[in-house]
Image 1 (cartoon, rainbow, N blue to C red):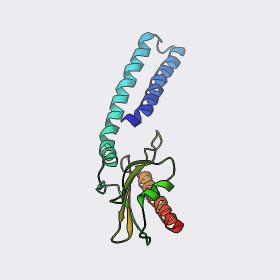
Image 2 (cartoon, rainbow, N blue to C red; image 1 turned 60 degrees about the vertical axis):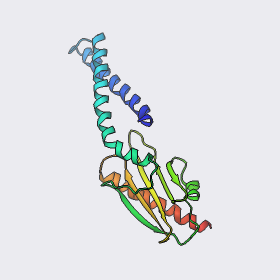
Image 3 (cartoon, helix red, strand yellow; image 1 turned 30 degrees about the vertical axis):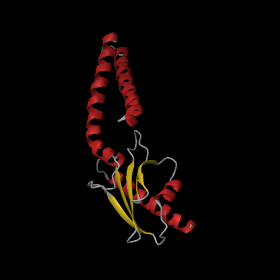
Image 4 (cartoon, one colour; image 1 turned 90 degrees about the horizontal axis):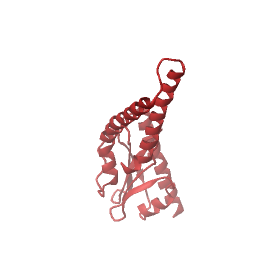
Length: 180
């Protein structure tokens, strides 16, 4: 939840300021009087809204955040997981080399070179909650299994973005194979 702190604070002040602004407009047209209690009612309303809104989001996000930050090699088992298998003819595939060519905005949360597993997430903000990705190198079959899923609940846009994430990582893996 620490990473959401900035968004929570910004939305709090947006809601509180919005309430005060609307009440001030009402006072200009004579529908309500604007005084100190209006500010406090707005503050309490903003706190109440933030607690409900972020509490429900945290309840929804918690399993996925715990999974992506856990030091575990297990594959994700979420309903909205998009998977893709990428053939890698190069026996020298390495998640460390893949990590080096990942875009700088990607945050790697777990990596195990021996098991060939890496987990990472894209940044989240108020408009997009981000995509979480699990990469598993299966040396016996010479494939890399990509599993991406959105942090948010199931939507068509989030599912599409998870598929796009898999395709982008697959292109990076192929580019990595060409560099050798």
